[in-house]
Every structure is written in C-alpha cells, then in structure tokens.
Amino acid sequence: MTSQAKRSSTCSAGAVSLLALVWALPASATGWDLTLGAGVGVAPDYEGANEYNPIPILVARAGFGKQSVELRGTGLRATLLTAGMFSAGPIINYRFPRNDVDDDAVDDLGNIDAALEVGGFVRLFNRGVIAGLTATHDVAGGHDGYLISAELGYRARFHPLLASTVIVSSTYANGDFMETYFGINAGDSVASGLDEFDADAGFKDVGVTLNLQHGRREGWGLTGILSYKRLLDDAADSPIVDDVGNANQIFGGAALTYSF
Image 1 (cartoon, rainbow, N blue to C red):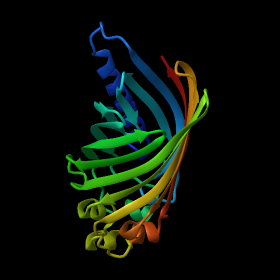
Image 2: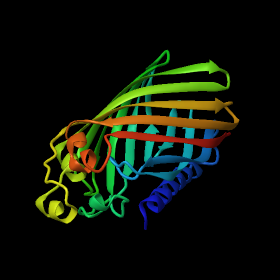
Image 3: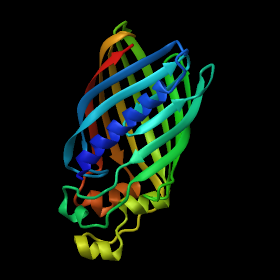
C-alpha cells in the first residue's frame, strides 16, 4: 500500500471511530452538536521531504456542553476536563510508517514502522488567547520516543460567519524519536549513499498555523488551513533533510463541513 493510500485509509478509520463513539451513546442523550466534513490538501511525502502529495482531509467533531471528541488529522483528542478557562484530556495519534517514499535515497533507508502516540493535553483559553501543552509517547514500537509540544495563539471572530485562529508552536523530541526519523546508521549509509548521522534530542521544529472557518453554528461551512513548519537542530542538519529534503515544511487544505 502506498503512503498516500495509507493516509486515506487511516483518516477514514479515525472518522469512523469517532462516529461509532457518538452513535454508541444512549438514545436519551440530548444536546449533542456534530460536525462532519471532507476536503483535500497537500502535505510533504514524509517529514523533511521536498516532494508533496495530495491527501484527503476529514473533519469530525462531537460536542456535548464543554466536553468534546474530535478528529485532528490522524489524531483523536477528547476534551473531558473543563474548569473556567482550563481544559484537558487524552490524545491518541497515529504516525504513518516511512516506506515507499518518492526520494530514492530515503527510500533505500530502513523502513520505519507506524507509531501510535498516546498522551494528553492541557489548554488555557481566555478572551481569545490560547496557550497549550501536549505530551505523547509511542506505545507501538515505531520510534519508542516521546514528544512535547507547546502552543500560543489567538482566536478572533471578525463576522458572525467568519472566525480565524493563529497558532505558533514548537515541538521537543527525545533521542529515540530523533534517531528513528533523522539518524542514519552505517548500513543505511551504504544502502542510500547518504552520510552517517547521529540525531540527538532537541527542539525538532517551530511553526505557525492559520485556520479559517466560515459558516453558522448549524448548516454548511468551509474550513481552510495553512501551516508552515521549520525543522530545527539535528532534524534540519540530517542528510535526510539537508541533502535531499527541505527544512521548510508546508501543509495546506480546505474542507466542506456540515454541522447539526
């Protein structure tokens, strides 16, 4: 199965899982608001690539009062604890395997299995200002590492039908993660022609994301997203990125949504 096909099937599975969770609720439950949507975007072939591929975008969210479950890319996030401007909950994120990629040298490196990252988040929201922290750890053996991400942003509503959110974020990755995705051992160096490289723990990236939402609380809407990420430290210095890839990573897409 190609990387693009795997992305499509995984996104679909995530949306189905969320819908199954909602439909499993007691029939007497009222007050739920649901949002479903689909669209298309473009993303790097793998983290650090300079080739881009079209990908499907699926939007799914189920909310009840201040609690919610939502599909974000390849991750499920549940907001379960809320108190004033504070919210928190668990996260499950699927990270695609790296195999059958477009770049010949990177394709000759050893394959990397899929990772399942489990963790949680805390978030503060006050008068449009957003501050959050996320921590996850791989439990499937893909990289056996952990990631810690911090974000700071602002959400504004310019019109009853138009809202935007700007988020600046950065991610710290431990040595297991960095060595898995950006390190090159002696065997892989011979197979690919890329220099050997030891990737150490550090800040993996910094980026900014713009999200635009148009539509009413109920009915049809349109969501657009544009994200730029700059790889840092050993992630940027790795031959996988510095020689045959690109430290500048862009993601963009749009989805048509329906809320009810």
